[in-house]
Length: 245
Image (cartoon, helix red, strand yellow):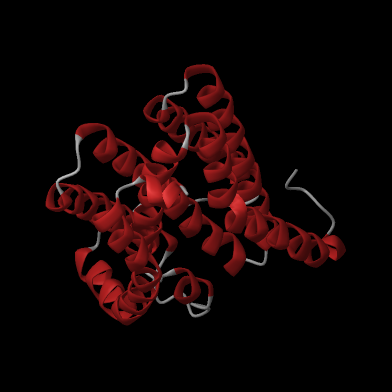
């Protein structure tokens, strides 16, 4: 899957980048459609709000770093530094999610769905840092293939389990497991092409990288939060079912 002719790399990069971007754009709409049909508008509303929260928290996990990483042609920071920084931003992302859920006072099931969807998005954040590495090394097709296969796999798993159990919590757990297994399995298989550097925890470099990307994460977080605010207002005054409707 990875060994392709050099003259076909650019063509495959375009095709797979379009494919992965398209799937990433429609996944929330498709999952919400399935949840609405299978579980009804109340669960759909909870899922919709949880997915919006996870999208907002993902901006913390990604930390606006992809464009910076992909254009770091002078190798100011090694891939090991990018990997370690992504571990830290993922921890910050999940910590922020727990604080948010406690602040909102969600009941157990609603809190679990929100947190699980954010854990699912953490796999997106891990995918993103490896995607930046492949892109920087001229293999955007690899990034697109991994993302596309992963998204299709966990969406199918989520839908099948939801149809069987009618339980959002179990379905989200299965989606996380599938996404993680597929992601790390495919990344491991790329070792035949690239030597993947392990995370390097050099705190001064990590601190500088996070500082340099801070304006990017603020901008992306605020942009995403603005689009999510109407959902929280509707949910506050009318309940979760209105979001499903």
